[in-house]
Length: 85
Image (cartoon, rainbow, N blue to C red; front, side, top):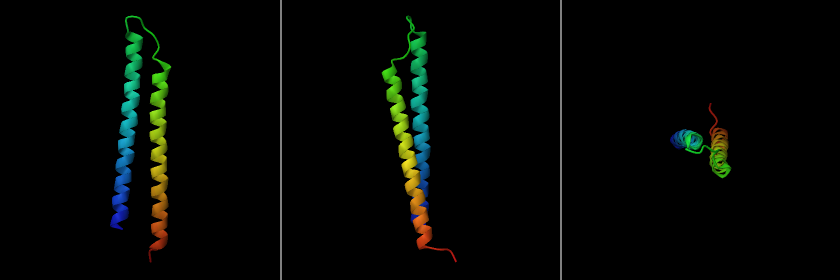
């Protein structure tokens, strides 16, 4: 049971860190867009930068979903092996 609690804590910490990472990456993208628009010769931000940021965020989101699904499967397996009663 302690192992499951520790795993849950690890998963929650990973999810929070992932959310923070995504927020940071997206905030930096917004900053870059603003700077490009305010440049002496304003221009849109290079689409390659936007694509790269979106790939990072999407990849991290997939990792979050995978970790969440694996943890939920572990909880179900643990509960099946250790029925309450």
